[in-house]
Each structure stands twice: as structure tokens, then as C-alpha cells.
Image (cartoon, rainbow, N blue to C red):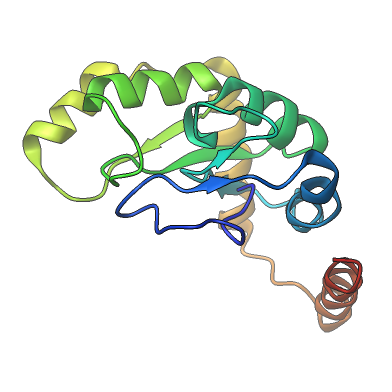
Length: 168
């Protein structure tokens, strides 16, 4: 979140940059996530959205997390980083972890199993904040509740998504 659709490269290998303006992003890319903002958790994108933060990718951008994800999109669930071992993010593992938490992410994700990297992420990590703990508890309760969407809810969601895509 808030989207890879306009990314020019694969964030597993390098840092994508989206140059679309804020109005277009709000009406299309961000609108998709706004329709999903009720979900218990979402994952950040290692993508620069130049109209919001010309330097930092969403995962480590307080501007994107605060103004777009938590603000415009209205997501108040558990915000998990994408894999910190991906090549899109620069800096040491400790710096990446610390920057993601400082930007407003709740949980750090590191996937490649490299011990040295995991130790670096752990050095940059902190205990869950009170707000992150609340979000985690809500997300866990939602999953443990295991309620599936009814057919009507799925159809309603599909209709809303179609309307967003038609306006793009």
C-alpha cells in the first residue's frame, strides 16, 4: 500500500518511482486502498511516490504513512512493512528497521532468513508501541473470528471496486 501499479521497476531488485500527481493517485491508486481500509492489516510498498515524498519510499516515509495511508486512505489497521531485505531499500538493516518504525509502520517484516540481516533488523526494532499493540490485537481478533464475507458483501465490494476502476 498505497500501490505498485504505476511502479517502473520491481522493488525486489531496485527502488521504483511513481511520478503521477497527487490528484491522479488519489482518484485511482489510493482510492483502491481506501475501499479496503477496513481490513485488519496491510503491507507498505517500497515505492517512492514523488508527489508525496520525493526522496523516501512509502515504507520509510512519515509523509506517506501519516498523510496518505493513515490520512487520505483512512487505514487504521496493523501496518506491516514489505520485506526489508528487498533491494529497493538502501542503508543497513538496522537503519531500514528503525526508519520504518519511525515512519509509522507497526511491524517489521524480514523474509530471507539471513542471520546477520535479521540481527540488524532486531537492533533497529523496538517493542510494539501501545497503538501498534492495539492494532495487532484488533487484527488478531479479526482473523481469529474467521468470519467470511457473505455473497452480498462480496458482490457489494466487487461493485465498488468496478466503480473505482471505471473512474480511472
